[in-house]
Image (cartoon, helix red, strand yellow):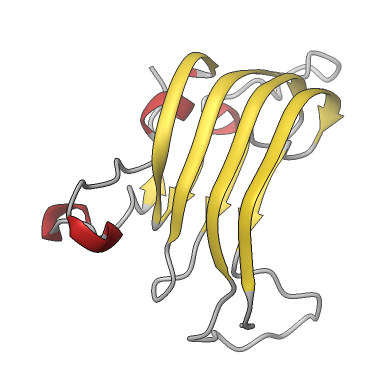
Length: 146
């Protein structure tokens, strides 16, 4: 839980090597061993990732936004992340999954792995920036890879 705003933040031209999870937004983060589920969260909007490339060891993308305060306007553009090849057996199907929860935005290729391309929910054009009922939640699961 927390209060505040993160707005209009851009990450661009970043190379990563053997990073556990290169792209992370986590409104559920807790630095203690036991944490209560909070209903408050920092509002996150206008976060852009552009030209992020390299290798990961666990998961390419983890965007976990609060059920009460969704992340809005997240852009994923030109993301090319491959599983690290250093340890045999780590390049599993599960490892290539992008996770998005209650997160809205847009994607633009190239996007590797392909699970990134349909992880975010699309933003509605409704007045006031609200979302249509059918898009009121993100994919809410690990997005499948193709």
